[in-house]
Amino acid sequence: MMQCLLVDDETLALKLMEDNLKDVGYIKIIGRCRTAAEALTIMQTERVDVLFCDIHMPGLSGIQLVKSLVTKPIVIFVTAYEKFAIDGFELEVLDYLVKPVPQERFLRACQKAYQLFELKNTPAAPVGFYKNYLFVSSDYILIKVNFSDIQYIQGLKDYVKIVLNDNQKPILSRTSLKAIELQLPPEQFYRIHKSYLINVDYISHIRRGKVLSADIELPLSDNYRLSINKMIGREIE
Image 1 (tube, rainbow, N blue to C red):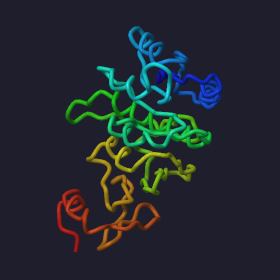
Image 2 (spheres, helix red, strand yellow):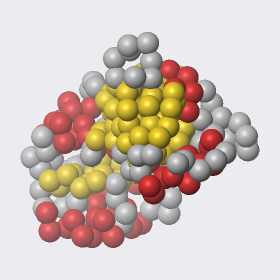
Image 3 (cartoon, rainbow, N blue to C red):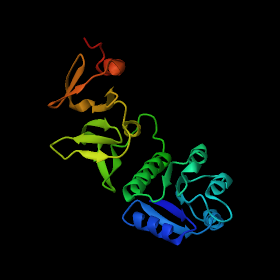
């Protein structure tokens, strides 16, 4: 569970953020603050994984608050002022939301935060050892996916489509193909194209420019030919 702190000097803005988060099962609100000083007090005693923070506030601004932190949580600025965007990204904040924030845009920022939180908090596996599953976010819930069920994964701009075996419904998740690839065992999953990862267990044949996975023919890019050659122990003709 990811713990978050809401910081905004406007009561209505705090209420809107709280309403947007009420159905997000992987985020727990641990505090609501009207000033940066209040936020600092809470952060001294509580674990804060993600900070949703306004910028223009009385006393310390949101930017000054983030600059003052020795150990920074994941930061998402929620502000009425577009002009501070460059300052925000110089502080390496995860996202910058401009009020009024559509709910879909706010929830997309939550998903990005959770994906980063998972990556930061997943222990490094010993050499040669991997889990046999991963969790992906889809429709605001986390779904457990066994590696053995994954036939291939396709990158679709802001989403990935995870195609499963036995006619199971594909899973759409708002993440990147690279983020998924980092969680998969490299001896089982191979990149065959900039937009495709394939489970070697489902490959039925390979020919120049194509890989057949079950009954689906997928593109094989020249850029990834070396990794496929390594997998099969010979050059593809």
